[in-house]
Image (cartoon, rainbow, N blue to C red; front, side):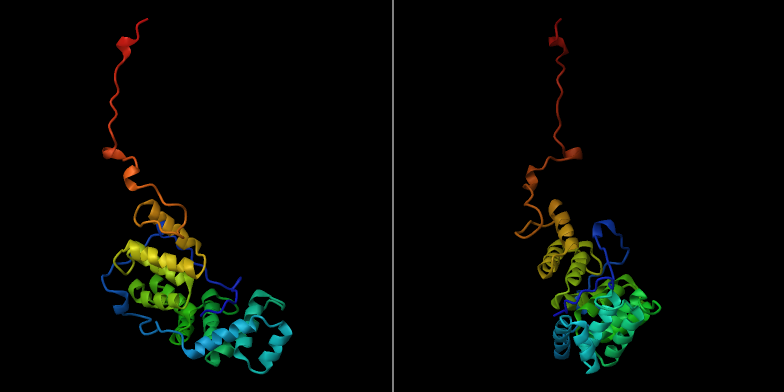
Amino acid sequence: MQTKTALLYFSLTAVLFPIVTSCTTQKHETPPEQCTGHGTGLSVAPTESTKAASAAQDAAAKLTIDQLHGAVGRGDTAAIVELGLRHVNGTSITQDSEAAVKYFRISADQGNPIGLFYLGTALANGVGLPKEESMAVFFWEQAAQQGYGMAQYWLGFFIANGRGGIGSNWCAAAPLFEAAAADNVTDAAFMLGVMYQEGRGVEPNYDKAASWYRKANAIEFNQKAQYNLRFMIERYQIEWQPGDPGAPPPPKEWMIPKGENAPKLELKDNSAANVG
């Protein structure tokens, strides 16, 4: 389960509407579970320690700033991460990205998967230290090894898009997205929908795409998933289901054909009847 701590300004943003983006990646017939490449072996379920870390992080998010400082003094790794987040966002404390990174490093050095994730995210964004995507991947991998879903998602995203010094490999990214989706990362489920809708690394399958979009929206309202579901429904690629956006479209056979299949209208010349 993912911690609900808000990233606010400290976030990576991916606006991924497949109908307005292009991709030239090669399509493969290899099922996602048989894919190989960078990231192989990191699509694991959260370990017990990762589950405990997420629960502790949720608890730390509720502490006051004085309580946080006290917990940090006792070496509480969740409090250390939370204090870093508050420094990033300037929540009840001075905004200080460099101080935030210091706390993320301390927690990462202790093997905390959430601290590892945020240190990687700081590197990916260039927040508090120079931007270095390859090092971001390095720390995300360590968090992903412990089954931390957000790290698995962003690692998969970088692998799919060929970032961080990694060649683009959508097939290898799929298992990471699946593991993250199982850990309730809504955008991971959305990315799997994109893969099946467009055939990125897998054979196109509209029904599978719709299933992943619906899962994304079930985890948390996902505007991108809603948009793509509506897009497929309006083109009769999938059937509307309760809970999908909009209303059921009219039966396809009711639609007026266009082009060569359109009905021909015969125009009669009534000029002879128009007698002055």
